[in-house]
Amino acid sequence: MNVRPSWRLFRSLPMFAIALFLVAPLIALASPFPQAADSAAARPQQDERPLPDIPALLRDIRKNQHAIEEIRKLYTCHLSEEEDKLDSDGQVKSRSVKDYDVFYIGEEQARHLLAKDGKPLDAGEKKKEDERFNKQFDELKKKQAELASDPKKRAKKEEENEAQISDFLRAEQFTNPRRESFRGQEVIAFDFAGNPDYKPAKRIDRIIQKLSGVMWVDEQAREIVRLEARFVESVNVGGGILGSLHKGSNFVFEQEKINGEVWLPSYAEVHLSARIVFVKLKRSGTDRYSDYRKFRVGATLRATSPQ
Image (tube, rainbow, N blue to C red):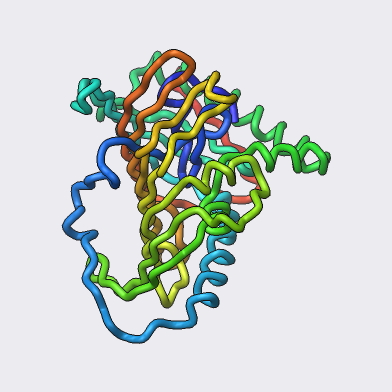
């Protein structure tokens, strides 16, 4: 993952990138969990019916999450990204909204900016953005071809990749399974915390093991519906020299069935308190994914600007 300045350093989701600097995003600060606008809808209601085979359920969820992470590469979608900059008291100083078309090239994400704060780019901005996007897209395609032809380079890249939900499922310990009603949908909820017996397979796993929270899953689909997680201790990068992600940082992540066909990410809420070298950051943001469309294999994609 390329190092990006300030807030961009910490956000690159769709999905679950959790780490600082070389591995950063989806995190939050203030309360134990973010207070989303639909928090009342998210409030669980207990159900006392018998539970299914929990080990089998968790195995299916892990397998299905791997499938989602592969399937999403075949789709493009619209992303609305809202960012709040906060003052030292956690109050909003400024807010910006950007709209993108999102494409995947292997594990990498390419974003084509469409609008800022509800206004489409003007002709000059669009031309500049189209040129930037086309260059990025071509570079990612070239990189993907190089990785495909070099197993050692591909393995190293996988080690450096940002965390996916499947990594999280592997590194956490799930307890207290229970039936609940979530927004009128029957789900099974779990509490989770880092699994002390798990031996990290990647560097990111050591960071994931510092998470705790709640996960809601669709019993029939064997898919994650919502995930709420927070860091129970601060995370240092480069021995704390490069930066740190503060204890209490947390996030919300949601998936849903798209077009009655496949499960894909739909929502992420992020709030973070962190330090990059000597700069302290407080940020809050929301990503909303919509308008998923299958991307034709072998299609040539070029952004075009009016002459």
